[in-house]
Structure formats: C-alpha cells, structure tokens
Length: 509
Image (cartoon, rainbow, N blue to C red; front, side, top):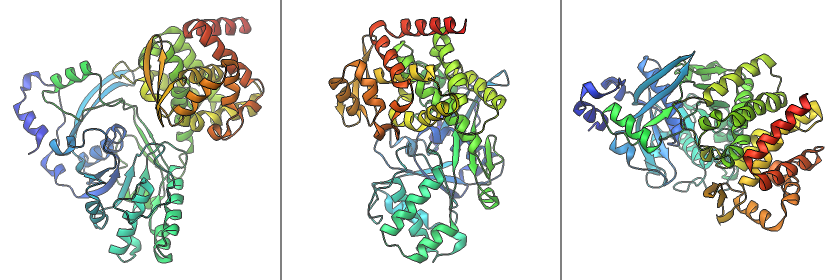
C-alpha cells in the first residue's frame, strides 16, 4: 500500500499545504541507479534532482538504495513504500520559496548485511546505468579485504563486488559499464575511488580482462554537491510541518532552495546522466572552480566557526548570524582570510559574489543547521578544508591570518574532552555537556591531560599525522593560536571576541 498516498486521501484538503505528488507512471519507472547511502544529503539533492528529471520526462529511472549501517530507522522506507517529502524552504532572488515535493525516485532499500545477494543480482540488471554514493568522507578508503565476502566491509569493496558481478554477467561487454558518481566531500572523489577500486581488484586477483574492462568501460566522475540539508527538523518544526502537510512522514527532509550538483564528465557521461536538465545539475569537463569555492568558503567557514559559535552559546548557524560579533567574525573569516587563501586561481569578484551568497544562505530563517552536526569529524574536515587554505595564505601574504587563528584556537578548546570511546568524547561549555564525534577525540583528551594550555597549541599544530605538515613552521601562527586559546580559557568566548575586534579596529586606525 502506498502509505503516503493513503494518508493523503485521508487528509482534509482545507487544512493541508500544497504538495506535489507522484503519478502512477513515476512509480512504474525502471530501476537505473544503485545508490550506497540513505542519508538526508542524498535524499535532498541527488535523489531530489533525479525525481525532478523524472517529472520532466527525462532520465526516467528509479533508484535501488543499499543501506550499509544499522543506524536510523531501517524500516521507514519500507513503511512508506520508498516515498518521502522534501520541504524546500529558503530565499531565491530575494523571494521566499516554500515547496513540498513527495519524491518517488527510490524504488526499494536493501540491507547490505542481510540482502547482499539481492544487491549483486541487481548489479546484473540491463537497466542499471549509474552508481551514486555518499558514505561520508571516511567512506572512500582502502581496506585490504576479500570482495567475495557477503558483504565486503568497505564501500569500495562493495562497489568492486558489484562491478565484478556485472562483468561476469555480461561477459565483459564494453557497453555494460557504469557511470560512478560519488558525492563524498573529498577532493577528486571520483579519481580516488577509482584508484582504490583498481588496487582492490589487483589484490583480489580478479584478472587482467576484468581490470581492462574496469578501466575502459566504466566512468568514475569527480563531483561536488552543494545544498544545505540539515535533516529532520526539531520537534516543534517537525510537528508543524506534518500538521501543514496533513500526513505523517518519518523521512521528511528539509532543504534550502539553493542547489548545485556539479559533475565532471565527457559527452558519454552526459548522455548516461540524462537527468542533467534538472535545475542545479552541471556537467562539465572541469569542475575545480565549483569545488574550491564551496569547499574553502562554505565548508571551510563552517569548520572554522563551529567551535567559536558553540562556545558563544549558539546552537544553529542562523543564531550565529543573528549575533553581531559572530556575524562579523564569519563574514571576515570567509572574505578576508579564506578567500585570499584558496589554492586555486579564483577571480576576486566571483569569490566575493559566492561568499555573499553563502552568507545569505547561512541566514536562511527556515533552516535549523546545528553547529554540533557541523562539528562531526571536525579534525578531518579541518585538515581537508582549511589546512591547504592556510598554507596558501602564507605563501601569498607571509602573515598570520588572525580569523583563522582564532577559529583554530576555539576548535582546540572545543576538543577538550573526556573520552567515552575510540571516536567519541564529552566536552563542556557554558555549564552544559556536549558530545564530540571525532576520530581524534581520544587524542585530544590525552593532549589536554598532558599539556598546559600554553603548550597544547604547539603540540597539536606540529602533529603531521593530523595536518599532513608541521603547522608550527608557519611564522607566528602557533604563537597566535596559543594566545587566543589562553584568552578563551581565561576570559571566555564573548570577551575574547569583543577584544579581538577592538584590537582589529585599533590596528586599522
């Protein structure tokens, strides 16, 4: 039974908000996509765009999803027949946008642990054309494993098993390769995934014929996804949305109006990914500019702001932009320190325009994007998003970027914790405890136990295993981070930020 449509029929039309519902034809489209991951970003961006393309009569394909973890509600998709509502809330060209779409692009969800045979069977489908993934930034890594396990543990291992099953089923037909579109937010995600899959193929002795087919018949695309999809809203907002819609949706997803899915590919890729007429999809031979702007300005600003905002008592990004001091810090961090440090040739006007657009998105009154969600795996994000920017800033200016230094000091204080597991810890700020979800939580718990605040910044910054380089070699950076860290501990975040701007104003005058 189509659960949401059943509830739609029971809803009182006079009390429900406008909703775009799928037709019977959309529910009958063939399965063309295999997707690894069920998270809100996938549902709110790639899946939403494929659904939009289907509604326009292009692509015309549905998605089989592989769920690899036990987290979340594993039965919600089954209860709702794969349907879920995306509530678009934001501002576009100065006008408010409110749109509710029931997406029907997901046909079924398979458990990797209990239904791996069904996943491999779908790998042999002649309709299958595309693989999409979002297994978080740590998902694309090499694990030396037997890909004949049921299932392999890693995402690259699972993907290789799928491709090998397809190769065997079609006897190496060069026309049966797939277009692989990872959306994990790491640079060159497609090329890195391809290199890992190839290495695993060699380690599993899958044969030269398969490896030739793997390289020649399949396309691994670098991609970039850009849409703020904070996930299930807070209880009050969730209850109001369900009341407005007139039905219950356990997979309800809120997303901003802005969207971008940039995919690096040639004409063959564009032909297979025929959903590209959907708004926000860009397929080009080189997407570096899109990636650098988003990674360094939007994501980099998030990563260097979450700790200071949290220490200031702000729960969400919007709250921080409503605070005069934090809003000024975030604005200047992005445009004064991060923009000049982007390790790519970016026209300043293009960067400024993108940055101002990002700030407008941060102020979106409809989204509750929580800083603690942004803080997850913050150490890895800091290394990937901000260290290259910091290094390039020094190459260009040979001076301390003060906004980056203050953001880094706040991050070190945020990471002061009592370890509760290999990747978790409990911190405290403003008299309240918070959970740290970071693979380096244990490292920082030990660091804070062994070093004084004056020594801690230097000890952390010289750790090449964290940053890929010794950051204490940057003239003045460790000293400035240590100074700000001490000030945050002794005076608190509000006073530190106020003094920071007082000194900035004095220097400017």
